[in-house]
Image (cartoon, rainbow, N blue to C red; front, side, top):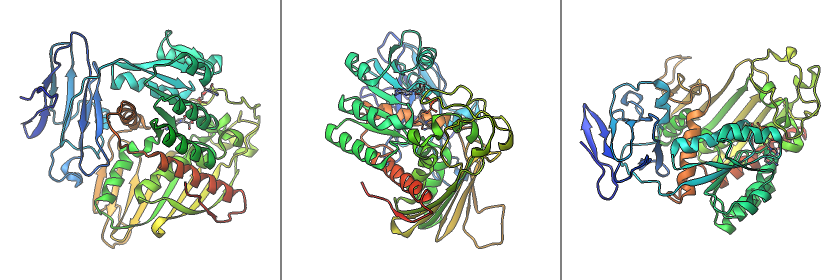
Length: 499
Ligand SMILES: NC(=O)c1ccc[n+]([C@@H]2O[C@H](COP(=O)([O-])OP(=O)(O)OC[C@H]3O[C@@H](n4cnc5c(N)ncnc54)[C@H](O)[C@@H]3O)[C@@H](O)[C@H]2O)c1
């Protein structure tokens, strides 16, 4: 049986073939949280998991059969309960009690080392922009019971009402960032989840105030603003972390690991098709589809995939060319006046029929609903990204081709699979390797938990390296902005400016 040693290091034991961690809470007389840091020497840095007081959390590795972890059995860390001053118990189990929880695992994480650390101080966080994405702030106390959102900024009544719903009536409310900064001097971090056009200015303010900042993607809607943020982060030394949560999705982690292991040889081409089935409802009803607020959907949606393409290729885009059109939604009837930057409460649910039946879109919409982007990356890697907002289904399909094989994902969450072909055959449904995707059932819930876990550790200075680098976020912006420029100028090729 393992336990917590004096230096806080967690000891492992082997039990029915599975490594099991078990330990005591130590000396506290109140509920506390311990952080388990799982480190894989091949990954870019420690991948932290935090265990909260009442939740049952599971970290599960890819099974041997996937070929991703040939020497390690499945690891399941299962926290049953953690109570003040009592023994806290982790148990191993062969099958997770709820498959969805296995998504808390990250295939890049390994069970090589585990540390626990007490969270010493209550940490207070601010959320800036209290619309649908603000709920990522709810992950903070799930990860660390000694941390939570206590401050919120939103200029509108309905945003402030949502802040109270999400974070409690006691949340301290402000209508703008300056007002917040004048009153709040002890924030451990800020999450910026406001509309895209506000990101750069707001992040510059929080960074200059010395507040570690989680900034939602896209980092900015113009390349020069993203460059300015890089400069401000460097000048102030304040930690900036851009919310490219797709890097934490199981499907992306699996593809990245396969590529890094050489499963398809050197990467030559990446093709991404993005079927944005709920585009009309999620984006075409409000600010998301007005250029003045977001510039292009190649940023709002495409920044994710351009970043994933860069991540998988290990290279940034140098030259870009694109075509696009407002093919369908320009003609839909009964449009409604723009709501400006206000939250639009008719975005959800997102099942209001196919394009010809759709009404009530934003009358000011001026972005493309269909786009095709070609990219030349460093090292001559070719990539393409296709985005369509009126498909019936929603998912992303990546194909990565190397000298030694090709991989492709079918489905991008729990229940999907990544297939790898290494032999020359006629069309074959069955691949040479098939790796089941775990986590992110129906979205990116698990990736959101992982990315927030990493941000909390980064903001607290516990780690220095993160899976998302600000320069990568900047390069996703620069590529998308250049692609939009090409798309709006007859498809002329454009060199992507370097930072
Ligand atoms: N990483 C992801 O998976 C993911 C998912 C969804 C959204 N996002 C990002 O989150 C951000 C917000 O998107 P959303 O869908 O929640 O939008 P939303 O329209 O639902 O919410 C935006 C909120 O910001 C408020 N707001 C407007 N102007 C403001 C200002 N100047 N200061 C503070 N608040 C202001 C609005 O009142 C509204 O409550 C966007 O940048 C989007 O790209 C990221």
